[in-house]
Amino acid sequence: MLLRQRRDIFREKFGRDPRPMDPLLFDPDADEPRPLDEHRVKAAMVEAMRHAGFDPAAIYAFQKTDLIATTRNAEDLTGEELEAWQAAVHEYRLLLNPN
Image (tube, rainbow, N blue to C red; front, side):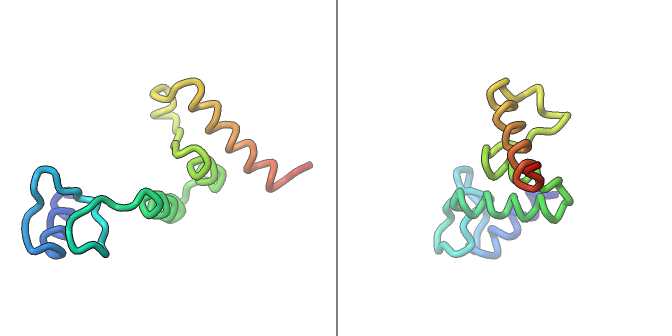
């Protein structure tokens, strides 16, 4: 369903079906299909996380590490990645309550 939606949005914007190398997450301001800027993608992800009710500490950790750690994917992260994410969560909590 999501792919169909993205294809329809692409078709509406560019007047044709996407080709194999065309990005489905494209820059809506571009005249030709090109991937979204990394900063725009990250901002959109943060907004989606807020809308979905993510813990603000998890959003902060994502912004600092570019990672999302959950009970379902934690085993896929390296020890270093998980430690960085956990440190960012801890940092957020300290910023809120420094005592």
